[in-house]
Structures are given as C-alpha cells and as structure tokens.
Image (cartoon, rainbow, N blue to C red; front, side, top):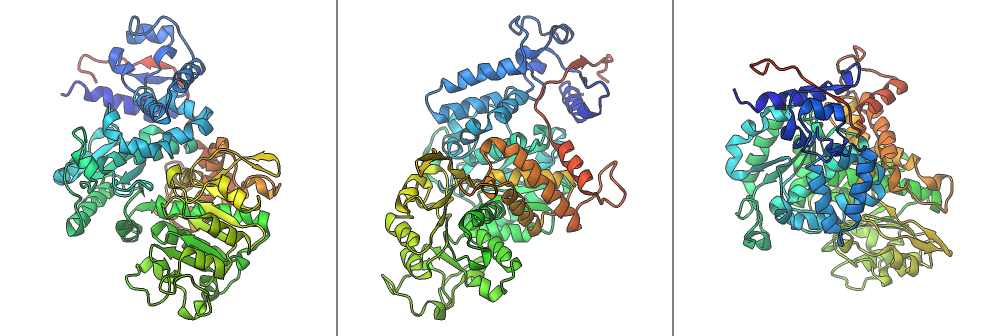
Length: 595
C-alpha cells in the first residue's frame, strides 16, 4: 500500500463532505508537515491551540494564534512591498501553492487591486517568464511525447472531484503570441477567477496545458525553458492529439465543463465547432469576449440613445474573437426586429487586408457572414482603392460603435477617432485587446480626441479619466464579467452542454447590472469590486437558460425532472459558491492499517 495515498484520499473525502458535516468540522487524517504543506488544508498561524495539540503542530508554527483577517493584513503588507506587478504576481502564485483558502480570501476582499495581478495585464508577463518562477506542480502538463499516457495521467485519484477544466495550447497568449508551456499561466489565472469571482471550489478546478511544442525561438533558446523543446506540432498530428485529449476527458468526467483558452485563430473556432456537441464546452476568447462586448454595448445604448436597429458597428480584428462578437451582436440586432439580411449590413469587419468584401481571397468560413457586398461600398471615397482600410470604413460607414480585438497597439489613431466622432454624437469605442500594451488606444486619448463625448470600454485596466471636470472610472470590458458566471450557472444546473443562448442570457444579465441604466453619466459596467455579485447574477441567468434549452440535468436531491423555479435556481447557484474561510478540524481515528 502506498502510505501517502490514504491521506490524499481522506483529504478529498473530507473536503467533499465538508458541507455535509452537521457540526461544520472536517475530519482530517494527516498531520504535522503533511498538513501544513497541503495548500487546501493549511491554515498557517490560524490553527487553534486544540488543533496544534491534535495534529502535532507545536514547534512548527510561531506560538501566536491568528485569524484569517490578520493573515490577509500581513500578506497585503508583504504584497504591496514588492516594487513591480510581476513580483506581486509571483508572490500571489507562491501563496496559492501554500494556502489556497488564504489567497482566495485575499482575492475576494481586494479583487479590484488583485485582478490586474492575477490576470491581465500582469499574467502576460507571467506567461513569458513562467519557467523562471515555477515552484510546485499545479494542474497538468500534457505533452506530445506523453500522448499515450493522457488517460493514465487524467485517471489519478487526485482529480476525482474535477468539475471545470481550463485548457490552452499556449499558441496565442493574449496579444503576445506563442508562449509554449508558459501558456499555463492562463489556465491557472482563469481558474483563480472562477474561484475568486464565482466561488468554484479549487478542488473542482483543473488547469491543463497541452504542450505541443512552440515556434517561439526565444523560448526554445532559453536554457531554463520548462516545456517540450520542439517546434510546434501541426496538421493531422495536432488534431489526433486533441482528439485523444477530448476523448480522455469525456470518459474521465462525463459532466465536466471544458473551457478552451488562447488557441490560435486556425484552431480556436474549428475545435469549438468539432466538440461543442460532444461535451460541455466553450471557447472564452470567442464566446466570452462576445458576451462581455454585447453586454457592454447593450448598456451603452442606454447612454447614447442609438438603438440596436440603428447601430453601425465596425470591428477591427476579424479573427475568431472579432467574428464571435459580431455573431452575438448580430443575433441581438435580429432579435430587436431587424431582418437578417439587413442586420448583416450593419457590420463592418476589418482584418489585416482591410474590410471584408465579397470576392476577397482566403476568407475563413466564420468571416463569410460579415462580408460586405461590393455594391454596398461602390460609392465610397477611398484613400487606397486596392485596400479599404479602417479610416476608409470610418469615413464612409459613419459607425456608431468601434470595437478593437486586433492585438495591434495604437491602431485607433487620432485621425480615425476624430473622423468617427465627427459622424456621431456619442461614439462607442471599445479597445479590447490586452494586455494593456496591446490596446488599440488609451482611454485618455479617446476622451481627448472626441471632446469627452466617447463612451469607452477597455480590455485591460486603465487609470480613471476626467470627464466634464469629474473623475470617472474606465470600464474594464473584461471577460471576468462573463465566464465565471457562465461556469457557475453550468455547474449549478449540471448542464451537459453550453449553448449560444446561454451567452446571450449572460450578456443581457450583465447589461442589467449597468450603473448607467440609472445614471447615464455613470459607468457601463459595475465596479470590479462587485465581480462576485455579477457572477451570481450571470450564473442565475445562465442556469435558467440551461433549463429552458433542455440541457440541465438533475443532481442528487433535485426534483425528478430537473426543472426548477427561479427561487430553486437561485438556491442552487448560491449553494455552488464556496466561501474562502477556515473550518475547524478534528483528527481522524486511524487503525493500525490506516483504514
């Protein structure tokens, strides 16, 4: 018998039964260093005197018995003492590997300060420098040379309680490109937000990096690079690997939620299309980005007075993310009463070769719905007739909304923004590319170039603006407003699929929380400090939509047909949300054989 295995199994059994304990006390059968070194059970100085007696902790800890609030204060002092965001990011990662309850209590109480550190923009540098700060195993690295071991790796008992997976192959990390194995920083960061914002228990969360090599020569030449040192696998071999992965996941966890993250344009959409009807899955870059942009625009309409039927929308970056945004917005426009053919003409998708127009070579299938007919642009005045650039589109289409997901910094130039502002009273401008260094424009410039008329949402955090002499927060139009709540609703209803209508429901729910609905001078989205509240609202909407779509399944104790009213849905969502707080422990009585 492996002497370590019973302790691990017991730990998971204890955590699994945590909410079922009548007296709220966890029964734990590991002690001493094993207990302190388990990040899911460690309480540090918050172990009580009685627990120190029972678990043999005297001498291993300072004599002071503290509280989680004291620990948060101490960790904040240490965190704020680091001179750079990257050092703060590394500190939080170490704390996560030491004491998960404490790190999430810290995040929940100070989410506005912590969000830029655990996710964008700092996570980008975290991915670039991942090999230099790696300390302890977290999640799974499934490498191409180990492809025949995928099932064996996933089958380990330590993953018995997994309910949500975030997986990346590291090829398109934010706007930074191929980071290889360093892309693991994205699944880790996303799942940290699942827990901090939506209360998904860390025991239920599994980050996975699919290591198929990298074409980043800087990573390959780095002597401390931790990934598979090989050029990136592509073609049939890539597809076979992904198929092996999905097959192993669906066999291991039939009801798991699998989130695809930061896959390259050539793979993101087609993998979603291939697997969305085989398991419960979505792509956050495509669907989450679409939902947060749609929610923000629905909120902006309350400020500008320009209805969906009147919108003229330009999207810079016609990849899977840009076309995903266009697709969800198109549905919203059609739902508002506009015929589909007419609604399509309200969208102008601009890619690296300019405006998408009929007859353009090498168009992707997901771009085709947003190709403009040649006749629609026949009378346009163009700077360069052979290429219809962003300025040409702005000058001729006179859009009401401009969205950037290009990853190209500074592409919303003063000339372009002033041209847009000349054609509409309150231009809606969303430079959504992240990290901050990849933003199409800064909010400060957008406000100056539009004489303070712009309605702005940015993909990364920016400092407050001054509008009409008053300070105003910049809306961080970040997927963190959407995907935690989507996951929460899916898990609460044990949904077997993620539908497009769930993302529309999420977008509308987000718009419903808009402060601008009550005061047009206020922000479009709630403050980041309210992300946990937003996740619950979105979770309720997604859970209800799952039931309406017929993809919700009853869990133990549910009504036989799985149908719930709004009150039951709200209770199921709230019951899924873990609160990071220490629980009291009792030591298990062990037999001589560890039974």
